[in-house]
Amino acid sequence: MHPQPRLTEVVDAILRYLHRHPDAADTVDGICEWWLPPQWRVDSQRVEAALTRMEAQGLVRRRENADRHVLFSRANDDLDDFSAPQ
Image (cartoon, rainbow, N blue to C red; front, side, top):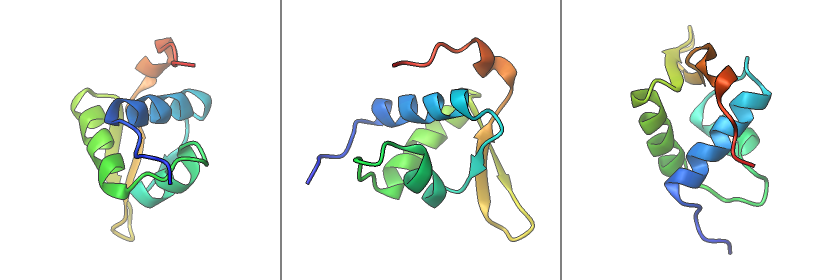
Protein backbone atom coordinates (compact mmCIF):
# COMPACT_ATOMS: atom_id res chain seq x y z
CA MET A 1 0.00 0.00 0.00
CA HIS A 2 1.30 3.45 -0.90
CA PRO A 3 1.73 5.95 1.95
CA GLN A 4 -0.52 8.99 2.02
CA PRO A 5 0.98 11.90 0.05
CA ARG A 6 2.00 14.96 2.04
CA LEU A 7 -0.51 17.78 2.30
CA THR A 8 1.66 19.98 0.07
CA GLU A 9 1.67 17.23 -2.59
CA VAL A 10 -2.13 17.12 -2.52
CA VAL A 11 -2.30 20.93 -2.83
CA ASP A 12 0.12 20.84 -5.78
CA ALA A 13 -1.86 18.09 -7.52
CA ILE A 14 -5.12 20.03 -7.14
CA LEU A 15 -3.46 23.20 -8.46
CA ARG A 16 -2.13 21.29 -11.48
CA TYR A 17 -5.58 19.91 -12.19
CA LEU A 18 -7.18 23.36 -11.94
CA HIS A 19 -4.51 24.79 -14.19
CA ARG A 20 -5.38 22.20 -16.87
CA HIS A 21 -9.16 22.32 -16.22
CA PRO A 22 -9.99 25.90 -15.19
CA ASP A 23 -13.77 25.35 -15.22
CA ALA A 24 -13.67 22.22 -13.05
CA ALA A 25 -15.84 21.97 -9.93
CA ASP A 26 -16.36 18.90 -7.78
CA THR A 27 -17.04 17.51 -4.32
CA VAL A 28 -14.29 16.22 -2.04
CA ASP A 29 -15.12 12.66 -3.12
CA GLY A 30 -14.97 13.65 -6.79
CA ILE A 31 -11.63 15.37 -6.26
CA CYS A 32 -10.26 12.23 -4.57
CA GLU A 33 -11.49 10.12 -7.49
CA TRP A 34 -10.78 12.29 -10.54
CA TRP A 35 -8.38 15.15 -9.78
CA LEU A 36 -5.54 13.27 -8.09
CA PRO A 37 -3.09 10.80 -9.62
CA PRO A 38 -4.77 7.39 -9.98
CA GLN A 39 -2.04 5.56 -8.07
CA TRP A 40 -2.65 7.72 -4.98
CA ARG A 41 -4.99 6.52 -2.28
CA VAL A 42 -5.78 9.73 -0.44
CA ASP A 43 -8.35 9.85 2.33
CA SER A 44 -11.01 12.53 2.10
CA GLN A 45 -9.85 14.20 5.33
CA ARG A 46 -6.47 14.95 3.76
CA VAL A 47 -8.13 16.39 0.65
CA GLU A 48 -10.45 18.49 2.83
CA ALA A 49 -7.42 19.81 4.74
CA ALA A 50 -5.70 20.73 1.47
CA LEU A 51 -8.85 22.46 0.20
CA THR A 52 -9.26 24.37 3.48
CA ARG A 53 -5.68 25.62 3.19
CA MET A 54 -6.23 26.56 -0.46
CA GLU A 55 -9.49 28.34 0.35
CA ALA A 56 -7.74 30.38 3.06
CA GLN A 57 -5.12 31.36 0.47
CA GLY A 58 -7.80 32.39 -2.01
CA LEU A 59 -6.95 29.62 -4.49
CA VAL A 60 -10.24 27.71 -4.43
CA ARG A 61 -13.84 28.63 -3.85
CA ARG A 62 -16.28 26.59 -1.79
CA ARG A 63 -19.97 26.71 -2.67
CA GLU A 64 -23.06 24.68 -1.98
CA ASN A 65 -25.28 23.62 -4.87
CA ALA A 66 -29.05 23.25 -4.81
CA ASP A 67 -28.72 19.64 -3.59
CA ARG A 68 -26.64 20.91 -0.63
CA HIS A 69 -23.46 19.27 -1.96
CA VAL A 70 -20.32 21.28 -1.30
CA LEU A 71 -18.36 21.93 -4.50
CA PHE A 72 -14.85 23.29 -4.88
CA SER A 73 -13.61 25.19 -7.89
CA ARG A 74 -10.98 27.66 -8.92
CA ALA A 75 -11.42 30.89 -6.96
CA ASN A 76 -10.45 33.34 -9.70
CA ASP A 77 -8.26 33.90 -12.70
CA ASP A 78 -5.10 34.37 -10.61
CA LEU A 79 -4.27 30.74 -11.36
CA ASP A 80 -3.69 31.73 -14.99
CA ASP A 81 -0.37 33.15 -13.84
CA PHE A 82 0.32 30.10 -11.68
CA SER A 83 3.21 27.98 -12.85
CA ALA A 84 2.01 24.50 -12.00
CA PRO A 85 4.64 22.21 -10.46
CA GLN A 86 5.55 19.42 -12.83
